[in-house]
Image (cartoon, rainbow, N blue to C red; front, side, top):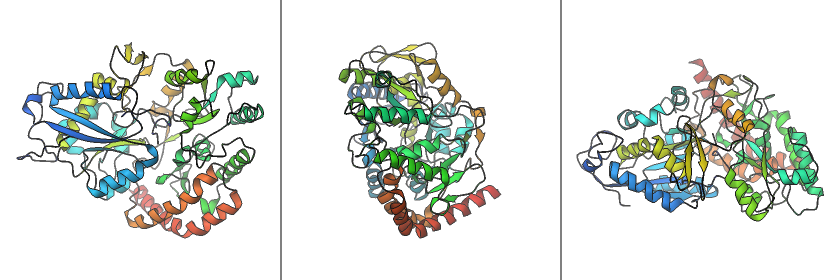
Length: 512
């Protein structure tokens, strides 16, 4: 799955490092356990691992972490300490951490963040040897095609985190409001707009729509484009989820939006501008400090983009605390026609071992521990019998105060993931569809990773320029013609250099 990131609203979840002598290979531990399930902890020196992840600490963070560390202490003489960073600060803070050599063992990264750049600059350990020595569970819980497709220049610089071959995406709307407005279930984008305008005209005081400005993945135009199989447009990830350089169809070409003014993207920009002018899109979309999902649960917003197919029970529980009869439902615009969607089988999120870590062996041993079902469940769902209980083979039921501390940030894989027992049949159908590789047409770019090093200055320069215009244009807050012209005037020459380098690397990759 998810920027998001699997989920915009995900409530994530989130020592003393001992330097050991006599170590060899990639790690910094004196020895490894004879059995990854336990009994080897006594032979290991004590280590505290520093782990950096995005999100926010959930209600059960301290209790679940205490249980995690209790098990880790007994099994591999290890403790973990999480640094949890808000998504809005993630890029800047992790850049500083790595550049300054701050003591970190494991760190979250992603193609939409700076994974390729950091790998190219030597901040991350190549993991093949560590996986072979200490990561059997990490390896076997992910299919080979996932490993093959998520290498960078043939190397593994992060464990891929995901459970499907494309992102889950939907728009959460208020079912109770829709029914009060006498509107039928929303099945199309036109239905969705009818709902948004009806909310606006209802004088309820609720903002009809709020998309994401901090992360361009959640900008409204990006959201619509990613589900449109008539064009199969997707980002090149040269600058996160930016569509300024994009792939289209399956022809191996890099397209430049300044040059093409791609009709489907441009018409969506014009459409969202109308939503903004008509006061359907939040007038604070660029300046809002709270996340869209958070505001929706406070009864302030009627529709938000979400990186899931179905509404988690906890969200409706939270909404009902504010609006007793309130209920969210998911609008899915995803095309479930086999073969219509392209996939490069890349994952959106990764966990990497930092090159300067003195405990690389132990970091992989911890990941291997975390990729066993009982520990995976603890990290993701919390304490069994207190926060959740298993149902059958791969389902779970939530109990009071449910929830763990991490998922997509550290452990997510298709083998151990459970589905909530209350998931409706239609959501299950969508979720199961995207876990099957045969439902997708293979992207010709599968296995390709852009090395931005030759144009790293241009990428940095363009990112600064893009920050002034992109979210405003793609969320309707800026007048399209005038501001696109200004954007083009400042960014066209720089973007062209990046495009040329990217196309050159794509051509070389395809030639092989």
